[in-house]
Length: 157
Image 1: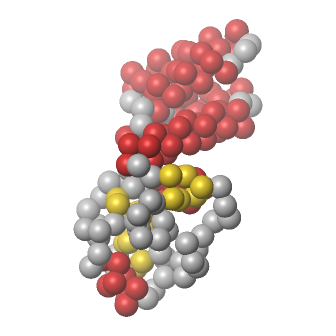
Image 2 (image 1 turned 60 degrees about the horizontal axis):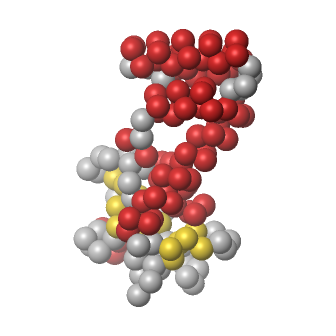
């Protein structure tokens, strides 16, 4: 059976995913629907039966990748080099990138982005990076991406 999912559903779930033993986002290979399991709840509903049903199937579900493993410092450097046209802004951001990497705190870069008024451009670039990350993961897993309205729990796939 070929698995197809919507890019938006996966990007939303991957955006929230982190590798912790007690929770996570999973993809149901039978339906293409993402599920969030955490602290006795599934999909943010207080429905013990739904949680039980999904938690018994975690070996069948595909855990989504942890986007936080992407290198934010490289993203910041790439954004600066590829998207910032103004040489003075680019120089300021390059310094902020070096400081952020040295101090291991991406906040130095993000503060400079805010001071320069480049939030929208930076977020758009990082969204592009996230989309590329998700598309690459799907390709590795043999998961097709479909362009249709978001599916919610209980809707037919």
